[in-house]
Image (cartoon, rainbow, N blue to C red; front, side, top):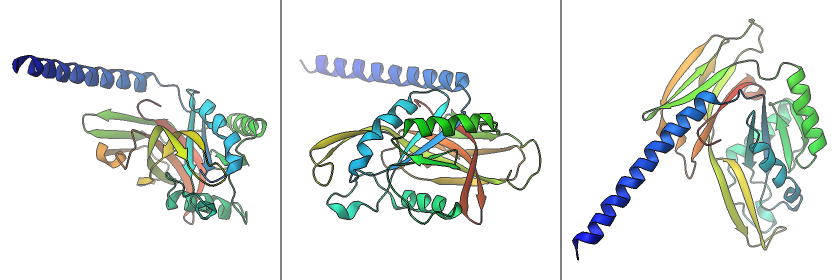
Length: 257
């Protein structure tokens, strides 16, 4: 009577190991066949923002598109309205404000989308968002090839070279840990009583190093992406001027995205 449960436990462990191994194979295959990223969409939002309800479906739809990196960035500045956003991070608030300063904008708001680090729109305005993405593609999209792959307990990042040596072909390489999906029951504030589902929630911003326009490679431990409850990651190559975020020049998706 003691051996039977143990046998079932061992069988369960073996099945779990096999499933994990299969997931690694599938993830590696998916990475190898991934469609190149043509646009990066950052949605700045808050659980305490009533207007953000209409933007949530927009980012969920974009996240399903193979050639789009769609990220949710919860900000902190509406926390005083009666509900503290459970996913918000101060560095994400700082990022949105840095975008505003870089483009001479005095105020930030939610829901706001930033496309490829340079185009701005209201997050619920699908027409404006699609126009920005289309214009970005017409300008050449994301010109720098980026590849991110898992090898054992390491993430290998390869960034291609720029076609010329203009000053704007300089920047930083970022590893962005993300939580692929999370449903949040909001108990108070403008969205009180609502359960909101967020996708590709940014859980941190990890600078891997500079990009000088030449092809470069980074090899970092997977633990660098294992922040809080993150279960995947994104790689961004982004221009920078005086510490302010510029145009996104290249991107790659991690497993499951």
